[in-house]
Image 1 (spheres, rainbow, N blue to C red):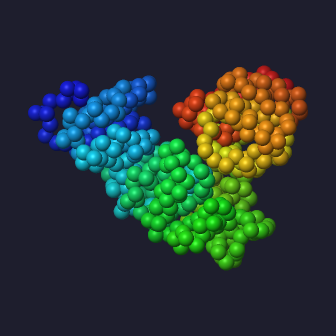
Image 2 (cartoon, rainbow, N blue to C red):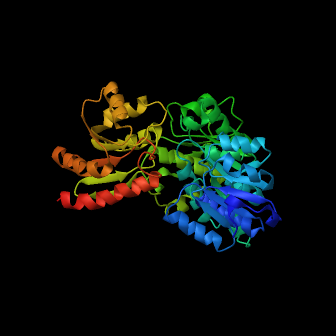
Image 3 (cartoon, one colour):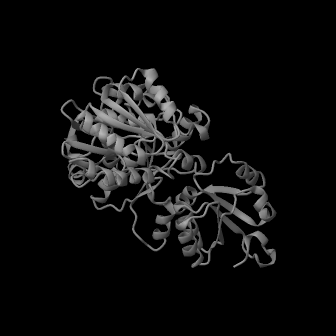
Length: 474
C-alpha cells in the first residue's frame, strides 16, 4: 500500500477516484466502483470503531483508506491532475471551499446518488422528497410493492445507499423498482436523476443554513418533480397548495375535506375515513395501524403511486395489514399502568413535532431539545399550549425554546436540564405527581448538539426509559 501523503506518480497507471467520507454511502460507493475495476482511495476526517471496521473491510479488497485525513484542497492539490473524480459525502456542502477549488481545477465532483443513478437508471425509480414524511412514504410504498411480488427496495436517504443495490444488481439480483428517498443534499448534487414517479410530501423551512434561502430550497426540491414523468403532490401542504398553478401538472392528494377543491384532487379521504380515487372508494384508512393524520396523508401519497404502478385497491389494503411502524416516529415504547411513553425522535423540526403532538390526546408531558432549526414556531407553540401540561427542555437550545413558549403564552411548568439522563427521572416523577397519561419525546430540533443523528438520540431515550421507568412506576 502506498502512502497517500507521499504519492509516487510513477506507480499510477489509472487515475484515482476519491471517495470523501466513510459513512454508509461512501463505503458502498467505494465497494461498488472497486468491483467495476476503478481505482479508489477513501478519505475520512474522523476516526472511531465503526470507521475502523469499514476501513479494514475495504482494505481487504484492495481499497486504500485514510482516516483522520482533512478534506482540504492544500492536502490534495499536488495530485489534482491524477484525480478522475471526487465522490462527496452528503454531509459536505457543494459550496465548500475545497469543493469549489476542485471544480475550478476541472475535477468532476459527484455524490453517491450520481453513481447509483447512472448504474440503475434502466430500472424504474420512484423519487420521494419533502421536508417531512418522506421516509414513511418511502417505507410504506416499498412495503406495498414488495407484498405484491415486486422487488422494490427502499434506498437513498432512508438508510440503504443506492450503490449497495448497484453492487447487488451487478451480480444479477432482480430489481423491479427503486423506491428512492432523496434529500435536498442528494438532489442538489445529482440533478440528472429522472424518476418514473416523483412524490413531494411537504415543504416547510429546513436546512436553510446550507441552502441559504427558502426559494433555493424550493427550487432544489422542485427540480426532482420537474424531472419526473408522473408527479404526486400533497394538496394539504400550504406552500405546495399555494404553488398549485405554477408547479408542473401532477396528481394531488388531500385529507382536508373542508379546505380542498375536489376538482383539483385525484386521491382523498372522505368524511367516513375511506380512501377514494377520483370518486371510487378503495379501502378504509383504519387498515393503517399507526398514529396521526399526517400518516394517513403519507398513506394517500403511497397509494397514489401504487395505483399508478398498477396495484389494485384491494391488494394495497391487504398489504397494509402487515405494515409495521418505523422506529423513532411516534413509536410507543411503553404502554401500561395508565401511561404511554412515545419516542418521536425523528421530529427534528417544528413542523414534524407539531404533527406528532396534534395526533395525541390532551394532557401530554413533552420533552423537547437539541439544536434549533430555522422555521416558523407559531403553530408548534400553539399546539403545545392546547395539548401539553408540562414541558421539559434540554440541550443547546433549551433557553431559546423556553423564550418561544413563554412568548406564546404557555402558563404550565417548564423545566430545563442539560442532558436527557438528568431529565428523564424528573419527568417521570412529574407524571406521577400530576397523574398524566402521556410522555412524548418530540425534540423539534436536530440532534447534532449531543448526538450524531436522530436514531442515536431516540435509542438513548429508549435506553433511559427502560432504565428509570420500571423502578419509578408501580
